[in-house]
Length: 138
Ligand SMILES: [Ca+2]
Image 1 (cartoon, helix red, strand yellow):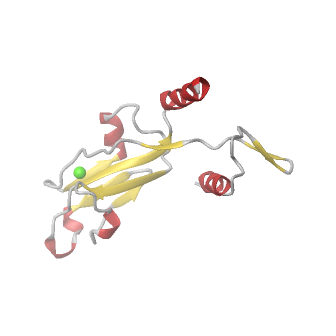
Image 2 (cartoon, rainbow, N blue to C red):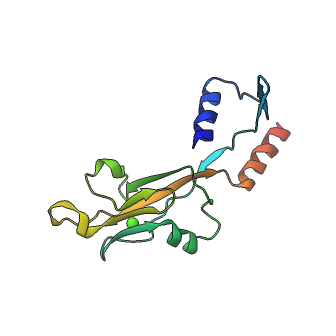
């Protein structure tokens, strides 16, 4: 995460413009990875114990689609409302476990809403290759 924040700062200040590597004094910095969102995943409904969008299950069901170390996770309801604004309680909501909303943990006996998740990962190689191809043919 520290690297990502550093990259964002560098990008914001224009320090990375058109450069594969930059030098700050004597410190050489590797190029920052380009980041992409994965597709949205909605593998569970809250009809049982809750809505379990866990990384272990998502990876098993979508091989190769989620990187090993996502930079961040985004969660929203199927209608597009951000999870943090629903007032519901979450068992976990992170880039290690994924996301889970447990019905029994919700206030006033309410059931979890149906959520979907996506992750920020380094862009897939084919996408980068396409980008390079476009630049070469311009
Ligand atoms: Ca769901």
